[in-house]
Length: 140
Length: 140
DNA sequence: ATAATTAATGCAATTAGGTTGCATAAACTA
DNA sequence: TAGTTTATGCAACCTAATTGCATTAATTAT
Image (cartoon, rainbow over all chains, first blue to last red; front, side, top):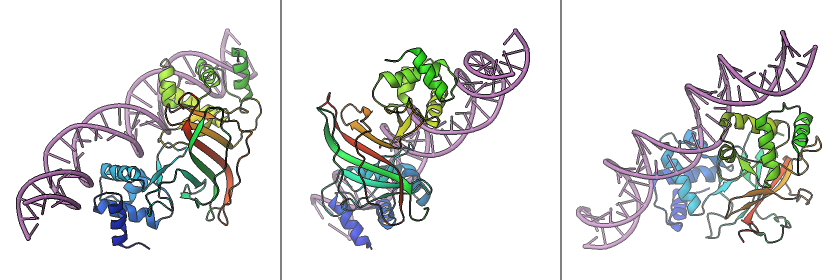
C-alpha cells in the first residue's frame, strides 16, 4: 500500500502543502477503490470542517489528483484514477461503473479502448466519459 | 413542428393530465434541441412555482418522456430523446455531447452503436451513458 | 532554529437545488 | 354538473456549493 512518505511525495509533486486533512483524504481515496462525494468525506472525517473538505477536494481537482465523475444524482462525485498519482499527465477519458443497488461508483481500467463516436459536422471532441450502470459483484 | 394537439396526445399516452405547465415545459424541450436543468426552467417559466416545475420534471421522468443526463456539475440535467415520445419503450443507452464553451448539452443520435466494454467478473451492465465533451459547431 | 511569508483551516453566512406536507384549485369521470 | 382525483402554490426544511475573514499552520529565508 502507501506509506505516509508516499503520500507526501504525491502532494509535493503537485505543489500542494502537506497537511493532515490532505493526507487523510488522499489515503481514503487510495485505500477505498470506489469514488466518493463531499458527503462521504464529511461522514468519514468529522474532525474536519465541511469547507476544509470542500477545498481539499478542489485542490486535488485543480492539481489533477482527482477528477469529477458525471452522475445523475445531483451531487458531485470524485474519483482517483489509476495513472493519476504518478505522472503529470491527466487523462480525460474515463470509464466508470455505478452499481444501482449499493450506489458505489468505481473507476474501471482505463486501458480499455475508448470507443470512437462520430460527431456532427463542426464538433470537436476533447474528452470522453463512459458510465455503465448495473449490478456490481456484491449485489448481483 | 408540434401542435398543441400533438402535445396533448403525448401527455395522454403517458397517462398524465393535461395542464398548462406540462404543455409549456414539453414544448420547451421539443423546440430547443438541448438539455435543460431545473434552473433553466425556473428562468424560462417564472409564472410557475419552482416546486411545480420540479414535479413536472419528475412526472416526465417517471413516465419516460425525459431522462436524466449525468453531468459533473452537481445539478441534474434533463433531456428528451429522439424516440421517447412515440413508443412506450424507453432506451437506457444514451450518447450526449457537452460543449465546454457554451455549456450546452445535447442528445446525439441514439442509433449509433454503443460500445461494448468488458466488465470485471460478476458485474452486470444495465445501462450505458456516453458523454463526450468538447466544442460544438458554434463554439469551435 | 527562528522569523517572515504564504497558504490552509474553521467559522459564519449566503445561494441554489432538491424535497415534503398541506390547503386550494384545476382536470378528469360518472 | 357533481364528485373524485390529481396538480399547483406556498411554507418550510435539508443538503451541497461557495465566499469572506480571522486564525493557525506550513514553508522559506535568515
